Image 1 (tube, rainbow, N blue to C red):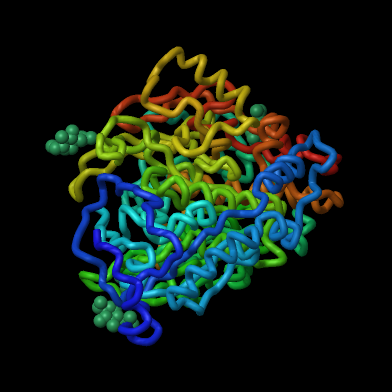
Image 2 (image 1 turned 60 degrees about the vertical axis):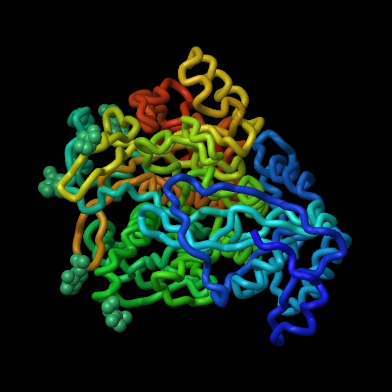
Length: 612
Ligand SMILES: *[C@@H]1O[C@H](CO)[C@@H](O)[C@H](O)[C@H]1NC(C)=O
Ligand SMILES: *[C@@H]1O[C@H](CO)[C@@H](O)[C@H](O)[C@H]1NC(C)=O
Ligand SMILES: *[C@@H]1O[C@H](CO)[C@@H](O)[C@H](O)[C@H]1NC(C)=O
Ligand SMILES: *[C@@H]1O[C@H](CO)[C@@H](O)[C@H](O)[C@H]1NC(C)=O
Ligand SMILES: *[C@@H]1O[C@H](CO)[C@@H](O)[C@H](O)[C@H]1NC(C)=O
């Protein structure tokens, strides 16, 4: 760790625009320390001239009030139910105090920083700075870190702030966040489809006719989840969205091939879905180029758009591609994703007047890869989206309790324990796990295996209890009961008091999809999440067509009433962390939540007219 450079040198000696040392009215004190998980290897110092988009999270003015309102407008038994907030009302509540804002601006200006961007509530300040300037500003050193999957990022494990700013800044990223927004598709993409050992042919003929366990299709989902007969009526007012990271682009030509085969009347939507670029995120209309297919991208994005369009057509779709602005050219010493895309996306979304009523995200990472302060703030940004009346759905991860041989803490002690995933662990979002088979549906499971290309980890529905977020009230009854029924099983390996997930589940094994002009199958809670999002968006259609408000943040409704519209899943285990894991049980469980959607039954749990 470098010492603080004497203040007086700064103005006189530095080149214009780059300052030389931190200036502050109080001494620097360490604000945060956070170790990377074991999968990350520290390499050399980050390049000093590599530009980072630094996001500074100021303490929000009145988040407690926002949270209270979020729960009221999302609670079907409250008189404010459905009275969602508009963007000004949200901004008003979370805008930082004048004192916080003044202190932070003073510090930045004193350090020669004048070019600042803001989130719409001014609760985030965004500056673009070379690594060497960030190092001085935060009295730290950035190093490159390499993940075992090859991802490189520039991060630090400790940073400081002048003491008088500690209460005014919640978090600054990218600094200690070892988060890379990994896609939740199981790494079985190229594996030939298999019939699960527990599979039994359905006796129900209408299901048996359309559901093929080695290649599940929209027609199967529409039958299994009873959306088949429904004709959406509110497509002009209702929308559904999904997010893309890591250079993923939903490919229109592949989507058109998919829809022509499996939902011909929807084929047009392959060309008409809206693609938004955030921070130079990639968008394109043509097929994958040779280079793109070579680098194997867009499996996730293609799956997402095809799963949604296949079930929710003609509901318009918004695709959000968030990049890592500013552009950089990866080389051995330059990380591939220096910036923090999650935050960029949610803050961009909060600036929009009209946001889709449901948004699906199939990305996540072990919770311990991000520092708590960062997780808490991103989660609060999600609460703001919920208060606006949007359901955020996140896939629960594909490694059960945390994969094989990976379940150790990164606090230096290497303690064995289950690893929760983030963002699904945020109590203001709805987590979606995965099922397989049809009669009955059960929690998804494919065992780990050694193949000719190496070790393939298990695929099992992501399950867990957050170590960062306390159990929200809406979960008290069912989660406490579930833990009680465990009778001490796995005590000490998980956070009993934490927010538990997932909340619901949906099919997640061997989806038919198109990629690079060819049909294949793909698995993951990555598939379950957009499918569930498509179905929830049909429920919103029924509500909006009845002159009612959309569901918004789902969980208070789900845990008090909505669960009755879901089909309970009672077979399976969570697996992961080298144990069989939590059992799937009757009622809510942390592998399949309340189970899979039955559209017609869900609509009955809402204010929509259902005399069809
Ligand atoms: C089921 O899907 C597989 C592809 O995974 C295909 O080969 C097979 O023909 C399909 N079966 C039926 C009955 O359609
Ligand atoms: C077969 O499944 C469909 C779709 O879930 C359902 O509507 C129907 O009632 C089932 N039939 C029988 C005989 O259970
Ligand atoms: C494709 O990749 C090759 C090798 O990495 C590179 O030299 C070439 O410029 C790329 N072409 C395009 C069009 O990006
Ligand atoms: C993608 O499709 C192109 C055109 O059909 C083909 O030449 C290429 O080999 C494919 N790439 C992969 C990785 O399958
Ligand atoms: C894979 O191979 C390794 C090394 O031989 C072995 O230790 C491990 O148990 C195998 N895993 C599975 C799931 O077969």
